[in-house]
Image (cartoon, rainbow, N blue to C red; front, side):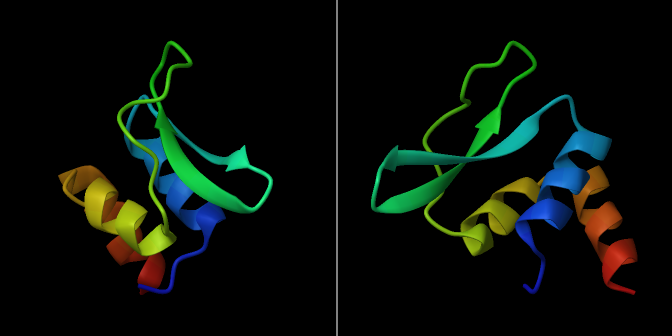
Length: 71
């Protein structure tokens, strides 16, 4: 998985009604959070982009978008 935060966010935005944000629960590290159409965080944050990738590619449209991006 060699996708940047921006590429993963674009895939989520293009293929779903969600957004992906970089959040800082404290001043020492960042997490990544899926944000629903109402502006609420959906579930727990992700520690790394690889975890985000694994989760969002369960959506077939997102997986296809990223596959095309990689080619």
